Image (cartoon, rainbow, N blue to C red; front, top):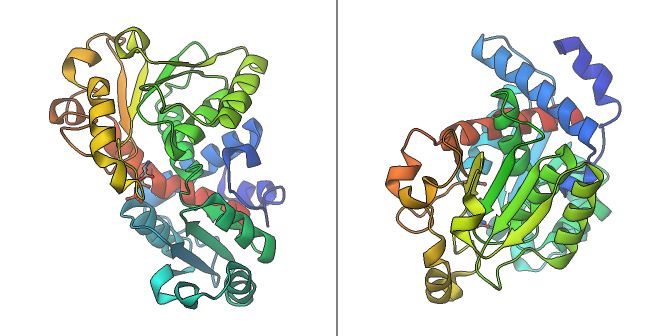
Length: 318
Ligand code: CP
Ligand code: NVA
């Protein structure tokens, strides 16, 4: 892939939304990876890549963010476009203007909307009314940009292999859902380990397991951390209490306690296991300092790759 190829492959992507991992095929995921790698290399060489010169991108947030906000804002700038940070409280949305009217207004000014929302329905509504691409920057259901950046991190290291075992330890929430769907799509064995009651939604499990079987791999769940982590090539975790679940904090902390990613659990994985986390982490809860800062961790490479993968997504969709 070279710079001029981006314009050619873009034809198939332009104008589409990215609300879920299910919106893209395996072939399209691999094109996004190639474009991300190219843009990452160009950035490191100091070569400009103003693929979206003169465009504007709205970045709408209903929840806090460090990585998503900064990587989208900086990435948009690096592509030659203008990023507008919009928080729900500052918009008329916060005073009851509808999502539909907001979408129909924004599309007259900007060329795409990235949104972090409480409900996936809000994204669907934005996409219904805006004739410009809408990108999911985290919802209650999924975090597709996160999962794409994470699998890109494995792919660029040459560690994305069919026979590998990818283990997610923690809540069957947004991040886990996008990872399960993407693992199935890419033909990677996926095991979710959680306490009872924190499984993925049945619809996601069914979709992931059907696609995994079609690709010759498994997508399974267990309650047993010690058994599940055995031979893992990747162990991934996320916070026990996601944004918006604060009132469940005490119950979740006690339910998840036996599911902490610590040194004694990590010892049961493959000797060259990679440790991953979407961040932000609650050090001492779902992951210990020793593991997070230890030799197996590729956590900050993941964080960096949010920038490169989202630039590829924007360059292709907008
Ligand atoms: N991983 C992630 O999306 O981080 P932020 O909440 O900081 O954006
Ligand atoms: N599951 C976490 C992910 C944060 C990036 C949350 O929704 O808060």
